[in-house]
Length: 449
Ligand code: SAH
Ligand code: SF4
Image: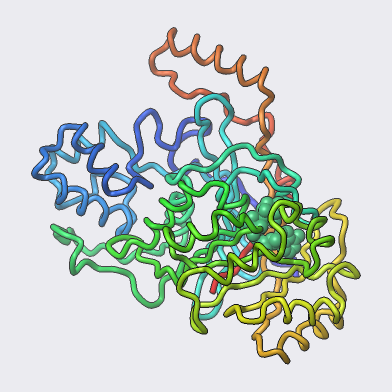
């Protein structure tokens, strides 16, 4: 179904800041900071110590509950302080380079983030999948990926860099901005403290998030942790940890920390039941084989019938879709509270696999269902805008060291010539996508709990 695909478009005006300028401009952003870091930033900016707790609570509420992107709207903050904050900090969003809407309502945004240090601005994709009763946002954790799973388009793009906590949280804020997913601000409601604050309950447009976009979240642990704890903060974005899913290709040593320190739902990209095949499909398996991965799953804290691990299994024709594979899958998962998601393979330009035939998928699902697992076959969403699982890829490229050095030297020279020129990298205009490229971009859409 591609007929009613709305055209990818350049947003009429950049949202936030001009291309190539830091999302935070020259000013530091308050988005994505822990409360402690925000408090420290306020103190450094001259806010009296005795006020800091209250100010953090106010800001937290305006930023995450109300979704404001400027200090001027913060009606319960004194005028002088608002002006001071405006001068010293920013809440600007990243630029939206393109926004696409699929025939099935799936939306995809291409967002541009500034260079961090030497390098160019980078682009990542974020996907929104509306369903009855929930709306899932699929968030990226890295630009590109260090891993090279053979069926995944992102895996063909080298890692450019990790996203910061600010950039991970910003994906959520941009989606909520664009969807209008904030409670209406009626008049100038005084918000002295977050307690009793209007917190969106039922009916939120973004009700679930999945770390299933570009990148391997457990290779960017600290930033992902900080961002997800902000997303789950009960005085702010307030998403239940049961509605947040982190998907990993199997970074075994980090799984216990994910459970203990983040405590969100876990999804494992399993895709094969024998090490020889998994070594091929998910090369990280050579380092962390299936047995070690499943042992880490068994030990994941807080598992129960109501809190299960999701095992993702991409259906590749003639590769991993035989009835014997399904039987082995059931045997392997014995004793682990598990859900199984069968994902029809989403092709991308040049991909070396085909999606399994429908009969094969049904046969596989039957065996799994018979063993007592609900195994929804995930209907691909947003295929028409290349927003489905494993189709995400951006044009951002890793720079060669030589080019980075030249850029750094150039930026340093420019900065000494002009104090205002603080952005370290030229915008990635050379690699900026054409309209046709945009339609070809691969993206992931993940589905939450
Ligand atoms: N790096 C993490 C999260 C991102 S990928 C991980 O690998 O788990 C999100 C999901 O999409 C993973 O299960 C991944 O294996 C799956 N996927 C990747 N490419 C796919 C494709 N072409 N078709 C269907 N699913 C794919
Ligand atoms: Fe990276 Fe996940 Fe794609 Fe593998 S499936 S290459 S880990 S994004």
